[in-house]
Length: 248
Length: 352
Image (cartoon, rainbow over all chains, first blue to last red; front, side, top):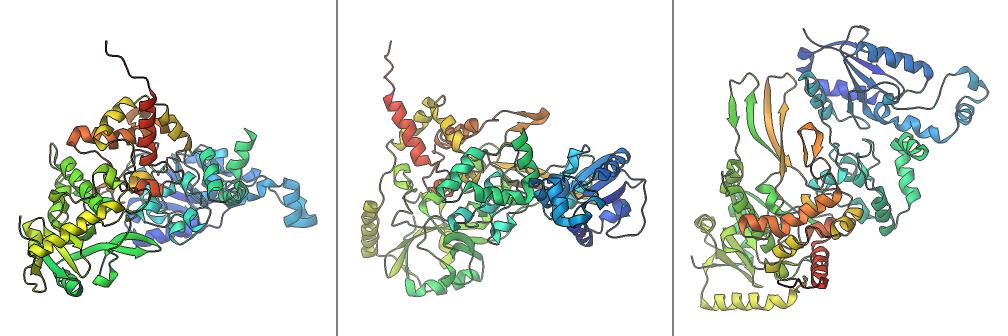
């Protein structure tokens, strides 16, 4: 029997699910291997019997937690799909403000009408078995992770810095171009696509497990950049992690 | 050895066009202020007066990613894949020729690596004599790699102003002129001019190591417990750029990539780096080089000693690429010199 899979979205732009749809166009064979029972982005049916759940988006409301727990309860394998689910992502930028300030800014005097709390990655709520990082996810990596799950293997994603892939591309180092780049502390697997097109890495795939942050600070200084600039760059995807780090 | 050839520079573009008829030709090209090896269409694409390329021409012999075998998961078919593209690699610096010689020794030791051998068999190497140093991070003179090793090239080009003096390394190298009539056999005066060009070049190649290359393996052996490795580890980002750009690094990872239908798969070899956390991770979650200090030590031990022990050649050719790439300025010149300085400071052990 084909494994049944389902896609769920929480607070996100749903771009990762679009990337999934896109990857199916070139990997039609996947549809012979699995039965998709729920995928709001692509179909109407909402089956509740599934073994593998892909979750896009971050958890931004208390009521999201119940829904996440129900998914965890049902699924044998839960995969975080993309930076919002993996890291909290862009939604978590607002965590630098208090929840009252945020309500006030967004909803004005109707603030009390809306349920919201501090955005967080889904692994802050439920156990996650695998992660497909990135903003958006890489379509080839999605297929590779699905394949490994179908094989019953633990999916392997890179845990080395973006610099490795940047050098393979023979891209001029962003620091030599006078730009700031989080490549030396960020997880590769994206093919270093941002530096390739002239934009310093913003760490959308999260940090590597063992970054040398002290040395990174010295690199910033040596190349005439400030810690504040680096923090600003890190705030895009890593605000949740940065704040957690600050509290611990 | 076959007598050398003289190729007038005016005939050079025509010879490249001639080679293009039979081969994929790659060589040094300018890209965003750097030099990278890539495919060339005409002689105009080449930048022969270049400093070290970002990634060495090694990438044509040990590709960053290479399919080794393809198979069906039901076991009915397994097929080894070998490179079949006839390629001419043009303009290889002398240090990189030494590196290729080392790779030849490594990949033919014990069981010959069939995939490397296929690349080597189909890849014609045309060296290019360096007449000036690449930059402050290059120390080929100290490493003894500023002259071409004979066994690594098929042809070797020396720029003599109005023409090229081309040394013949192999029969297949010489065959690159078969059917091409713009080239001449070198005469005595040509050899004299070539010798003059070579002897003039040395003043432009400073020594940059305080230690003699022959002493490096012993220096590393004695430095195994040095505190310097931890000092390097404190600043090392473990980004792996040093190994990615190294012409003698060949460590690889092998993984199976299975098609999403779980019917066919590929076994893929790709470059690995001893500097990243997971390099020495083995089954059971054990990591026998968990610290950056252990990994930096391993890197320098390998360059300075282990490869020498295995092949008789020191594993660093002094190109300076790793130093150029490193954001925190860990360089082989500084490292070898610092280890040497500390060794010299230690009191001589008195023989009992």
